[in-house]
Image (cartoon, rainbow, N blue to C red; front, top):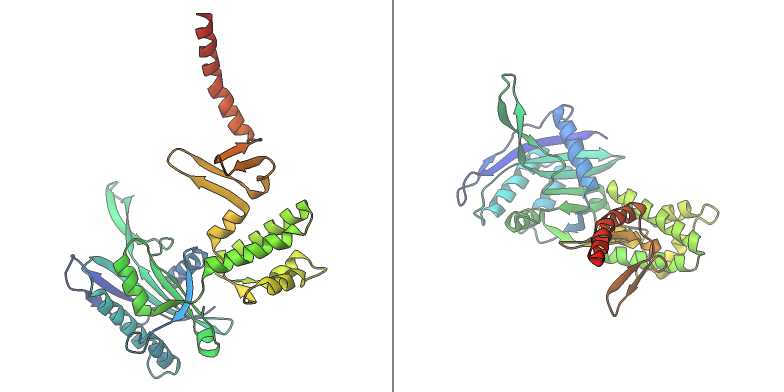
Length: 344
C-alpha cells in the first residue's frame, strides 16, 4: 500500500475575529518517514469511526473547485503540491466568514491500494499533556491524538472517475463546532449520497423476516452471525457485501440469503454501508437516564423479559447472579430493621 504523496499545511486564527494565517508547504513530506506512521494511525481511526457519512461531490465549479483540481492533478496538469495548496487556501477562504479562533494542520495524502487511488484530507489539532522531564520537573507538551478526529475525508478516486457512484466520498465532521463543520463541508463540496440509517433499517427488517422462518435457535445464530459480519466490515470502513455474507451463513446454499435480500429490497444493492448504532440495537436493547441504565440481549425479550406497553412496565423474570447478590445484601439490613420495629 504505497503512500504516493503526502504533505502538511497549517491554518491558524490566534484570536477570535483575527485574520487567518496560512503556512503552505512547498515540499512534500518524506512518505517513508514518521509521517507514514501518523498517516496509518489516522487512516485506521477514520476506518473505525462510526460517524462517517457517505456521499459524493456536489455544486458547480465556482462553488466547489476541488473536483476540478483533483482531475487536473490526475491528468498531471497541476502537481499534487498545487492541489493541496489550492484545497487549503479554499478552506481558509471559507473559514473567513467565522470569527472563531483555531489552530490546525491539514494533512493531504494520496495512496494506492490494489491499483485503487485514495485521496485523504485530515484536519489535525494538537492536544496538551503533562510529563516529567530529566530535571524531575512537570512540563507541558503537545501531541496529535490520532484517535480524536474532528474533520476528515476519504475519496475513492478510481470509483469516482470510472463509475456512476453516489458513495465514493466519505467524511467525518465534528458536532461541536458548526462554523468549522460548514466550512469544511463546503470546501470539500460534500453531498450526502447514502441514507445509512434508512438502508440499515431496511436490511435489518429483511433479516428479521428471513430469521422468522427458521427454528428459534437457528434464527438466533443467523442474526448473531449477520451482525458480527456487519460490525466487522464497518470497523474497517468497508461495506457489507450481501453475497459474501450469504455464502458465510450457509455454504451448502450460498445464495439463499442474498436472493432473499435482493427480492425484498426496494432497490436491490450488491453492497450496503451500515449504521453501527442500529446494528447494536438489533441484538441488544439499552437505555439510560440520570438514575438508571438497562441493557439486555434482544434474545431474552419475550421470555425472561416482558414489556407492557399500556402501563410502561418492564418485567424481569431472570436477573444476573451478580445483581441478585447485590440486591440480597441490600435487603438484609432493611429486613433486620423491619424485624426490630415489629419487636418494639
